[in-house]
Amino acid sequence: MTFRAHILGAAAGGGLPQWNCGCENCNLARAGAIPSQTQSSIAFSANDRDWAILNASPDIRQQIAQTPVLHPTDLRRSPLRSVLLTNGDIDHIAGLLTLREQQPFKLFATKDIHAVLANNPVFDALNPNFVTRETIELGETVEIAPGLRATLFAVPGKVPLYLEGASVQTDLEGEQTVGVCLQAKDKTAYYIPGCSTFKPDLRARIEGADAVFFDGTLWQDDEMVAAGLSQKTGQRMGHMSMAGSDGSIEAFKELKIIQKFFVHMNNTNPVLRPGSPQRKQAEASGWTIAQDGMEIRI
Ligand code: MLT
Ligand code: MN
Ligand code: ZN
Image 1 (cartoon, rainbow, N blue to C red):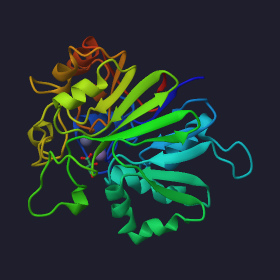
Image 2: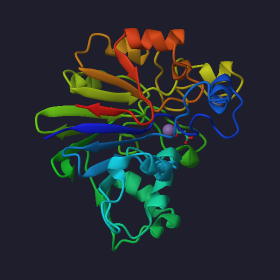
Image 3: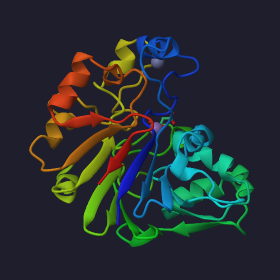
Image 4: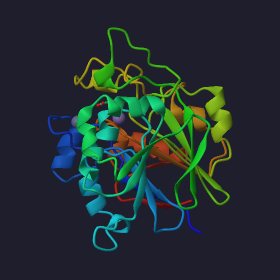
């Protein structure tokens, strides 16, 4: 039995480079000076044959094409068994539209995230005769591919950007933003691509894990403001940052976790530049910056 993860997309919404962004990283990526990264998605398998994709990014067509283990094994036979969603953000659901070609798979999400899809009739393009929508309760464990179990838990976050009202709570804990505990045989991995604050219950939950894939959106909270790109801080977007006394590097410092990966990096994040001081600092603290195409054995 093997337990594998495959990074399909290491970047946050927009990707690297983002189509309309002229920031330093995006320009370097366009010039081929640093690796480009597609949008947020990861695949897991417990047997190397059957795969679950966690979050369906707008780049899923390219991601599957670049990932031989996800190629069809026969006429209209895909190794994809399921898609699981951790929130209703565009970078995590838009790829569902690409998966509309009469291919059977299960679509797992909480009731609230399923409601977001149900309220957008374009997702009816997923023919219910092929794609079955299965609701997972928080705390319930389901098999999302043979031998691969997933359990969802609430993490602090917010509703998707396109559903934000006049005032936005960014540390909402419910069914809108979830983390995933994945288990195969005796190994445990956590996938948490969005988390606005690190609370004691999360610390206790992930202590001792074999692998954690964690929200690496920004290096520091005011990164996009300082770059003149946006008025929004990381906190306002529902993401905790890597650096600083309340950052994720500090929060994970004393935890015993065998492999730690940052995922969902925004294109402004300096860790996307190999050799940057920030990348070196994260690596010195035991983190790996996920990259498209990375294969991980757990
Ligand atoms: C996020 O992770 O903050 C969202 O994906 C932002 C977005 O929808 O572009
Ligand atoms: Mn995102
Ligand atoms: Zn950029």
